[in-house]
Image 1: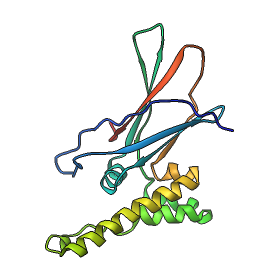
Image 2 (image 1 turned 180 degrees about the vertical axis):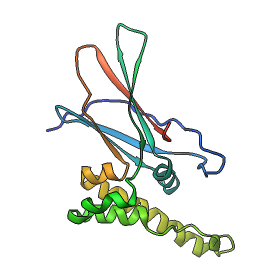
Image 3 (image 1 turned 45 degrees about the vertical axis):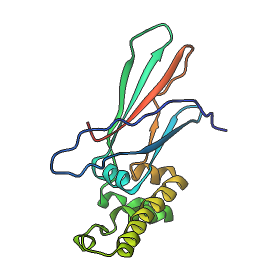
Image 4 (image 1 turned 90 degrees about the vertical axis):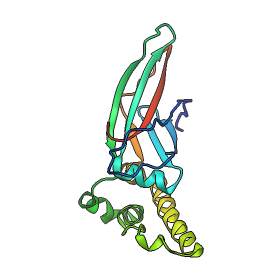
Length: 179
C-alpha cells in the first residue's frame, strides 16, 4: 500500500509572452503519493482555461528540501516544460492503451475556439463551454486511470530522487510555464 505523505504544493503564476493568452486565474490541484521508492506527483487543472494554458506552456516542478535545524532551503528543479507529448510521440502509447487514445483525442482534437462565438446566442456559447469542459474532464479521467497516460498528458511526474531521513520535510512547487 502506498504511503501518503503530507507534502505541500502550490501554484505560482508564471509570466506569459505578450502574444499568448493568459487566463485571469490559473488553478491546479496537486497531490503526491510515496510508493516506497518514488514520489508520484499528479496535478489536475481546475478548469478548461487552466488546462489549455498548461497544455501550451507546460509546468515547472520544484522540490524544496528543508530541515528543522536550517533556515536555508535547497531548491531542486525536477522538471520544466512538463506538458503533453508532441502529437507524433503518442503513436506507441496509443497502439496499446485505450486511455491513451482518449487523452490523445482530447488534447489534439480540433480546437473549439472560434470567432463564431463572438456574436452567438447564449445557448450556443453555453454548449461550446460545456464541450470545452468535457475535453478537460475526459483527458483527466484517462490520465487518472494510467500513469503513463498522465505523464504523456503532462499531468504527472515520477520523482525517483526523493529521499526520507530524519528531520527533512519536502515541499514542492508546481509553476505554470517552462521557466
